[in-house]
Structure formats: structure tokens, C-alpha cells
Length: 546
Image: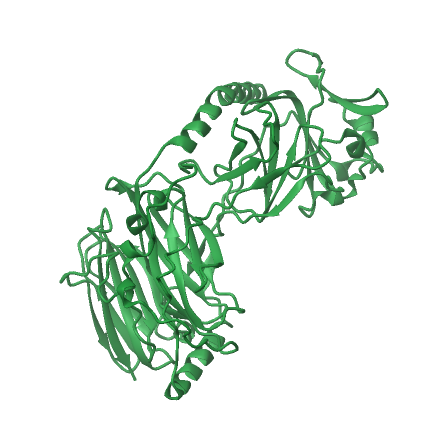
């Protein structure tokens, strides 16, 4: 009885989906949001393989933005991205990170953070900018070839106001640093204590001068339900009835479909499915090669040519503290300073009528024999010298007339002959749906979904006319280990002593961390988040630890 009710509910949801999802998808792609983005970072100078932690706030009309994705990137002095990541926004807040590659030369880099649409309204308010210093012991900095225009630099902070509010007090002794955060209950504060040493203070950028003109948007793509993958058909004549299949793959997989607009644009809503590494695009049209591209979701506009990123330089007297900083980085790398957060499983595409664990049955050499021998819910036939599959329509008690949707680890299989000859030795499970399945505008007459043991398509020969692209989804969430008890010195080996975002419960809150091994100047940065960047307050202070 429960199973019957579940199937009926599934059918109702599918029917609702075919009516509602195209509307939601269109709505999410065309709604415009004038957003303000600001952020605070864990430290200004890093070495290869270290993580730059960021805390992001995005607002729309003074409220948390409904956008679900924030974009982070580091640009070199030629404005070429060297690191790009997506992080999930929840109620306008996000915690993300960028891992510094080990092949970057020592230099200053431009950090940019924004949402999918925010740069197009105002690069000054919609994009957070910050210079970051990368110190690579193996690749020294280059000497300045062009004079730096100081009109783009400012000593005063423009992203978050720095007023006279007292946000913290601190005390030092031989064993510990005691930090008292000051505020009211429910105040949200981000706290950082990072090594400053003899590094020069990095100036703030005058964001209103960084770009020549207001950017003109090509497409407003508001990601209020999740990340949207934007593809485009390059055919001379666009067939608006053609259906494109996109499968996104990582630890799990997801199958998404889309239909081209008259302009050739195709939008794939990933929804709650976030963490993937590559995508595969196919079409229901019979083509030898797919004439299709996937657009980068990152903002393409570069700063004005008049803006020259300052050059990083060190004197011979800096050698000692740089060696100490390098030793601290290498020592800290042996200990885990972050832990993965739990990731929810991807919702199932459908509730199956029948499931088969293939190890419970005789293993045959091809899928056609497997289905003939012990899958009565699907028929295998030959028509016009080609293999066809016909699923039983369980509610109507008759046979469907079209092929069912066939998936292997989320990858749609469009070649029935190749599938019928496929050896399922690497397949763990087969699920059968014996009823209609609606996905956006498309109706499928049943479904066969295979899951492999190793998430490798069971060694199925992937289609030659498909488009394979490396495409990273939203990064895996990590939580840095902010501090350890005083009797544990592990957290004090590196350059970042504290990185923590918390909500004050009873007002003031005390934090105690051990004295670091690396001695010298440290910067304490406290950011109190308001409803907008104007209401937010940042306080910074240099403390000396001997």
C-alpha cells in the first residue's frame, strides 16, 4: 500500500514538474538582482598549497540575496585567472577558500568575489576586490617593468567601514593569547589572527576606478535555485525542438536536460546538486559531432589597462623572516587544519518500481541477455535490424511504444545496440521505472538506471560524438580548525592562528589560543557583520609576539 502511494505521489510530482519547472527555470534566468558583495579574508600573504579562507556577504536591497552561488578568483598581473572556485551562498552568507597552486611566481594577485549578476550593475559594489601577496620560495618575484599608478590605491578601507567601535580586547602572556570579543547577543563576527611579520601592509583598491566603463550584460542568469550551466548551440540554424542532455559527474552524478532557445542558448539547472568535476553533453539529434559550447560562468571583464598591480619585492634583510615563514608553512602542512563538512546525498531522479543487485543473479556477458533472463519489466526486441527496449507501462498494464530512458551513473545512453552488447561486470545495481517520467519538457516512457561499483560507468565505452568538459561545481565545504586548547601546540605551528565566524550568544565571548612558534608581528582582524556592507564594521590591530 505504501509503495503504491509513493508511486502515485511520484507521478503527481512529475506532472507538476512538467508544468512548473520550465516556468521556474525561465524565471530564475531572467529575474534581475542588483546585489552588493563584500568579504573578509584570513590573511594577506600566503605560500603555495596554503588556503586563503574568505567569508562573504551578498545583499539585495538591504536584505540577504536569494542567489545561491558566489564566485571567487585570483588574477595575475596579466589579469589571467590562476585560481577559480564556486562556493555556496546560504541566506546571503558564504564561507569559502582558495588553494594556492605551487606553480605561481611570487607576486601580488587580484582577488575578485561576486555573484553571477552582481558585476553588471556595479563593479564597485557588486565585486569585492583585494590584493593578495603570494610568496613562492622556488619562483622569485619579477622586477617592475611599468610604473604603478597610485591613483588606483587607497590606504583607507572602502569595502567595510572602520569606525571607532570597540570590537575586541586582548592580553598576552608566556603561554597564551586571550581574546575577548565585544558585542551584543546575536552579533555575527568573523575573527582572524594571521602572521604579518615584516610584510608591507597591502593598500586597498579604489574600486570605482578599476574599470573603464559600466559592463554590458550578455545574459542575466540569477542563480536563485542553484548553479546554472550555460551552454550554446553553434548551429547556423537553431532547432528549438532539439533536446540537449547534460550529465554532471563527481562523487555522485546528475542527469539534466535543456532545450535551445532561438538564440541557441541552453540553460541547465543543477539545483541542489553541487559537487562535480566534469560534464558530458549530448543531443537527441543524430549528429556525428556536437556543435556546442559551454560558457564560463565567471566574469570576463578585465580591469583598465591603466591599472598596474603593484610589484612584490623584498630586500636582503627580509631573508631571515621569510625563511621562518616558509618553515612554519611546511610544518603546518603536516597537520590537518580543516575538516570536511557532511554533504547531503543527491536526490534520486525517480523512485524505481523494481531494483536488482546484479551480484544476486547469474552474471551474463551482455545487458540484452541480463534483461531477457531476469527483468520481466522490460522487453528486448529487434526492429529494422536494431535493438529496441520496451518498458511495461505498469499503471496501464500495457507495453510502451518508445525506448525508455537509459542511464549509467547518470550518463544517458542513446545507442541501444551498444548498450545491449555492454558487459555489466562493473555494474552494481539496476533500477527499473515502469511508468511515465517527465523531466522539464521531455516525456520518457519508463527508465533503466544502472549504478557502477566504482562510479566509472562500469567501463562502458563513452559516446564519441559527446562533448566532454572539465567543469568544477561548487567546492566541497571545509571547516578550518580555528584553535586548540592551550596544552595542544598543533594550531600554533602555522601563520594562521585563528579563523572563525561565530554568533555571540550572551554578548562578550572569550577565546584562548596558544602562543605561536613563529614569533613576530600578527594582525588581528575582527569583522562585525551588519545587514549590508555599510552597516558592517572591521577593526584591525597589529600585535607583537616575542
